[in-house]
Length: 416
Image (tube, rainbow, N blue to C red; front, side, top):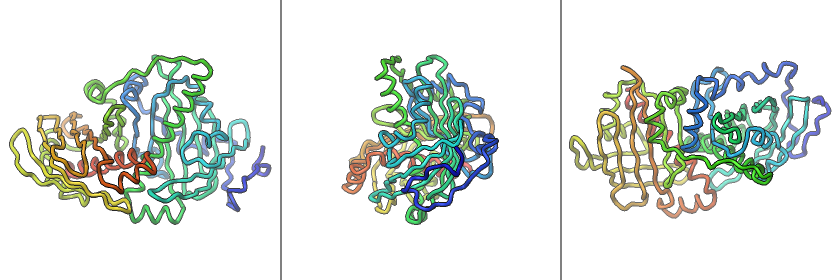
């Protein structure tokens, strides 16, 4: 089928479509084909161990092409074989049945390997739902689907699905969703400009929602067909950090790595490489008042402190069109040379506060640092509870973006 014979859905309106020469798809899709989790020297068995602890998000601030400023990759373990997961990815017309925010989805084939897909999303940003029609071209290969922008309310839209077999079990899969997008919608752009945290929230959460939806769909279909796989063996972040720090460092070297622990409560673990020796990083992290001085969104005030512990009054502010403020007292415990932990000890409008900084030396001048944290956002007042009741997925978005923000502040402070 040629471009001329494509049936364009009415919901696309009168958009102008970008047309490519697909005689050499490797060249057309080279920006995303250069990005692969397993092509960076990452052992698949260790990657499987990491996903046993929970979902991951890799924030790649150093992509292979300068044409893309950053990319996010979300990964999850799926209890279904690779061919079943791949079939779900290719089943675009049924996205409306299981994919969050997908209100319309149409697929037209251009040739054996290339599809043109048309979508209309209903994106919820706080209390507003925005309709975004757009189209992309899919390049279908074995266990992988890449896409590139064709038309719509995006200035740019690149991405890929990648299905990776589990070496230990052929009836399980690792699914990765890589994406870079830049919206064109005026309201979305104005909200991102006024509230920068929203941009981080949307990008971090969208990938995790997509892979979770794909996982649920693939596992459901596989089970209906009588498929059986062993239960996923759980892992913990503590085991990962103890046994596979160098692999975690490889993933974090691209920018930062987020591990969303499959635990109760859920811990959000953000890791990055700090260009400073571990002893200096530990000393910098002890200076909580100093670190908070470079942030507009949180402050720390030491109440009392000794060599092994500190009592600290914390105050945080989140500006998400509404300002959410919290203050509490936390007990910090210093465990040199590689760990600082804390726990909230007073009642406030944010309960369930706990976390830690975990350090691993990568030599004389670099340190792998993970910031691990949890809190109960539903205790943060009426407006936060209402927001999470309207859209429960915002909890993951808020927690993940807060973790990324704290990680950036920590890195800036330790590398000053």
